Amino acid sequence: MEGSTIAVVEDDHEIRGMVVELLHREGFDAQACETAAAFDQLHARQRIDLAILDVMLPGEDGLSLCRRLHAQGEVPVLMVTAKGDDIDRIVGLEIGADDYLPKPFNPRELVARVRAILRRTRERQRVVSALPTERYRFGGWTIDAGARAVTCPADRPLELTGGEFDLLLCFVTHPQRVLNRDQLLDWTRGRSAMAFDRAVDVQLSRLRRKLAERDGGDALIKTIRGGGYQFTLAVDRA
Image (cartoon, rainbow, N blue to C red; front, side):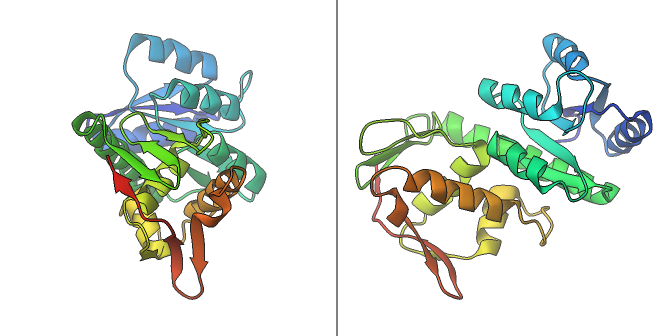
């Protein structure tokens, strides 16, 4: 994990310098980028293991850059938003950010979230490479874990963000079992994620909404009063 290349895309000179210095002290190869264009130039030259994106950037903003990176499917994103900017936070998660952090932030929390994302994405890559053809089937739905693809009963693909897919995979691999919020947080966001992190709640709400848009999808995940959530169908593993 140490030695991973992290791009810090931030136009505020003081914040950018502070984050780069902090990550250097923690053993990461932190690269400073003032704009999305500077990030593109860096990305063209070398592999990027994680991008820390500020929402407000000159030229192309952080949300637009996040959308591009999610479409390419290569670089995980930690989105940094102004304190109280819930709309930017929710939109960032919706378009594919792996996590978010509001300003002003605690430096130790930033490092914890960076480590959690890197660990989670590396574990994901190992699973994908080890199980390239693993599939799960339930009620006419299919999940291809290797391709990270979901197909509904009408044989149409369901577009999910990385976090939404990880949540669904947690439910599918633990069918008909009540899962509480702490379990979902731990399995999808890593043990270094803070206990007050509400990003998993946002992603779960979005996931259930997207599932409900397809026939039968509204009944897949049930809320258990005082317990958590339950995936209602039996799952066959192919």
